[in-house]
Length: 384
Ligand SMILES: NC(=O)c1ccc[n+]([C@@H]2O[C@H](COP(=O)([O-])OP(=O)(O)OC[C@H]3O[C@@H](n4cnc5c(N)ncnc54)[C@H](O)[C@@H]3O)[C@@H](O)[C@H]2O)c1
Image 1 (cartoon, rainbow, N blue to C red):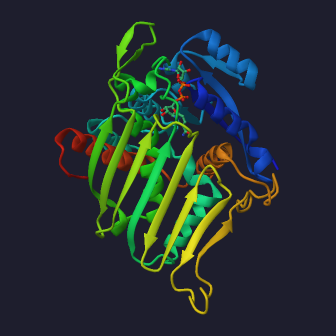
Image 2 (spheres, rainbow, N blue to C red; image 1 turned 120 degrees about the vertical axis):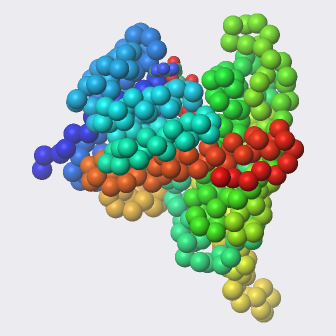
Image 3 (cartoon, protein in one colour; image 1 turned 180 degrees about the vertical axis):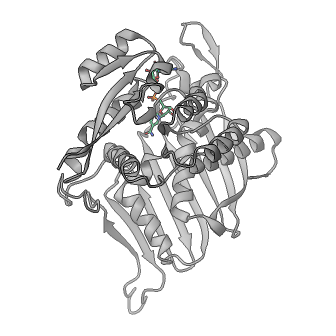
């Protein structure tokens, strides 16, 4: 069978450019007998040297620094945006204008005005596939958590709690990078880590009555001064930690906390959701296990069958996945990125809408906007 070639241009040659390149190249190993073949077509960086190096290292066909040349190249099917956040909106817009399918890293955009402009753009290009990279959705443990809620096993959701903690900003002598600079990141740790947590909670708890309604946020800068990228003293202008209380439309209440100033952490995402009939919890540092509590289970005698059950969520991807590595193998962070890329290519091949798409990304941005607004006003803010 002749496979349909899907040519992808990756924009941005940093850590996510590398991760996405891995995902594109490795899809045929993880998914069997695909009718399409994703190809690393063009890699883009700010300098020709960097782009050329990525081309050589990862086997791209072309290296290019001029974005306009990439989007006007008829060979390219998908523009995959892995640049710092302030560039996302303009790059998406130009790619749509050239009829390209677009995937973009989180956070999708940087403010409410860009959310509105992007919504209008989406209405103009209904046939183009768009996808926001929320890779944590694509692990068996998070997919199973979402299913259990959807199956109604938790009943009415009453509360939730989540956190995402890094220790990357605990060293006060470390030079501030662009993710700590609001002018490039658009926000601070809320944008960088909070976008993942908000999306995970939204995905798992589902839409409708379980959507976020209002939020109360508190932001923290632990180190007001750092060494800047130019070696001079630089004043921290973006949150290094963010704490939020939130209410859902159904009245459920909960909290989330994101931080880069938590010593002893690595890439620690923790989520728990409590309903009337059950609860789920997981820790993505242990991504092979989901814990489920069935509140309807018999509790007598001596505890009966009550208690959290540990569900094995190893590499149990449905067909055409599940072939490599075997379903009994442990899963990991990069596997979520590979599944994300597979879903994008499959949607482009079959002409189906992607999930999560840009509407999901916009929803997350609006929640973060309300959280920042609250951290300034000191009041609860509604999410529109
Ligand atoms: N989903 C995830 O797991 C995850 C993890 C980290 C970062 N991210 C997101 O990915 C994006 C990139 O982050 P990163 O960690 O790869 O950053 P990075 O700093 O490692 O890489 C960014 C790259 O973009 C290049 N660049 C900057 N402006 C450009 C332009 N106009 N055109 C082309 N290239 C340009 C830079 O030179 C750099 O190589 C951000 O939106 C970030 O929030 C997602």
